[in-house]
Image (cartoon, rainbow over all chains, first blue to last red):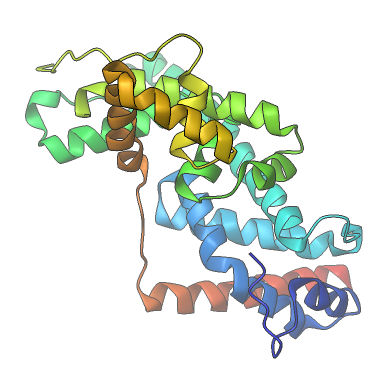
Length: 193
Length: 89
C-alpha cells in the first residue's frame, strides 16, 4: 500500500515533514493518493466532478487536522477513514436534498430532477443503461456501512483487516457487512447473472 | 418491465458468508480447502458461486479521466491548500 521505495520517502516521513510546515511534502502525499482517493469517491458519488470535489475535501480535512495524526495507524488508513466519512456525509446530504426536492416538486406539481425520483420506462432504455441504472439503485439501497465495506472490498480490493481499520470496527463485523451487501446485491441483480 | 425473473440460487445452510469470503480470497487455507471439497460435490453451491462471480464485477463502474482532468485536479488542489493556509495564518 505504501508505495515508497528506498529513494522515495514513505508516507509517514512526508507527514512528519508536512507537520513541520513543508507544503511540498503534503502536495506529494496528495499526488501519491489522489487517483485512489478519486476512485473511492467515484464509487460513492458515481459522478466525476463530485468525486473530484469529495476527494479534494478529504485532502483538505487531512491537511487541516494533520497535527492529529499520531502514527498509530498508517497515513493511508487515517486518510481513507477521513475520505469515507466525507463520502458518507455526502450521501446523507444527497438523500436529504432528494427528499426536499421531491417534497418541493409535489408541492409545486412539477417533476423532480433527481434521477432516482424520475424513472424512465425501462422499455425505452437499452440493456446497458438499464443495467447501469439497476446497479446504481442496488448500491444506493445498501445501508452506509454495508456499502462502505462492499466498495472498499469489491471495488478497491482492500483486505478485511484494512477495511476494519478504516471503518474502526472488528474484522468480524466487516465480514457481516460484506456478506449482507453481497446478498442484497445478488437478490437485486440476479436477473443479470 | 420485461425482466427475466430469475431467482438467485442458494447455498447449503450457513455457507453463504464463507462463499463470499472465498470469492474475495479472505479464507484461511484450510477453510478454503473445505469449500473446494464441498464445491466438488455440490452443484447448487457451484451455481451460487458462478452467479456471484458474474454479478459482482458488474457493479464496478470505473472512470478513467483524461490527463487534462488530473492537471486541473492538481491546480485546484494547490489553490485550495493555499487558501486553507491563508485562513490558518
